[in-house]
Length: 179
Length: 226
Image (cartoon, rainbow over all chains, first blue to last red; front, side, top):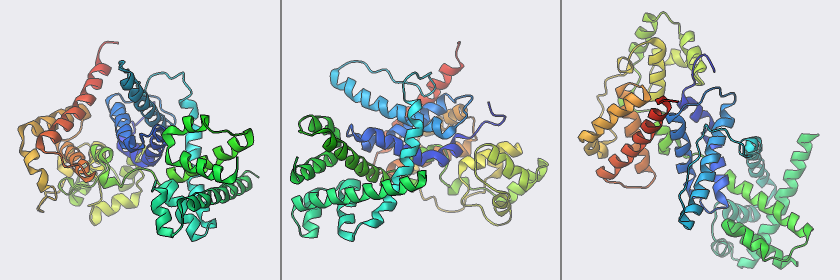
């Protein structure tokens, strides 16, 4: 245990971006991404109520807490659907699952979002608009197609091309970094 | 799989992330196509994630609850800080160092500025941390507010007897000063309203009550018999 306990506010200020990103990422494929803020809130309230001891890496701890609450929310939605009772996990319970082990991968993924964003510069303006508006901002394909004066099918082609170019550029940059 | 089919499949996977498993189950893909599609969907997800993150501090209910949003009614008084620090026998550098030991990222120059110029950007949680460091109640470090509150729309909630009780409970469970507790609970309400919701007084009080109760319950559990 550290000699002076850390203020949760200070820790949240430093790591809130990572917490929100991890929560959003976990909830995305369950169609619950809009609940990321609530998940982070649940994680922080849980920590306020029962402050942990012996934390060596606060970023990993907070990200794990957010991830666990996000998984809870997905399970809870599934259990509600089946009519069973849901038991919430605690941020400080001993975890035998792979949640904690995945933290390094989660933090690495956060770094890679920055690389992906940076690589948008390799695209021309039209391809950049297609991929950003549809993949990042979740705008309907038809709307973007109308703005560009092309068909939705053409937008899909442009999207595939843009993602392929982005992927290649990311692989190139990450390959350079590894060398 | 021809190129048109691939473009269509990719668009569908990006537009309906919650249906990816079933979409892929229904698609006829060889291993190479599957790997290519997975890599492109992953790239799209990284872009999606790059557009997500924490909300601006002033719209973040968690930041408000933790006292991270500067508050005109809980503003650090420069002269009071200097007096309290000297009375505690600490240097400006000592205060900065002790703040850093608690997790804050402040330097000696920040504390010096708070004492010699103004400190409107110091949030309630930092006022509380400084009060703990110099050994005085946070109320002794707060400048009297002469400005009209920017939170007049919350006046009704603030006057409600239940709000007073909630503040008292928040002070106890968080072990903080009353002024900081008021700032945190009011900040929480403001952030809720900023998020586009327009709850009435009863809804706001119920929501705060739920928050305070959840922290209290776990606090009691942790202090209970092992």
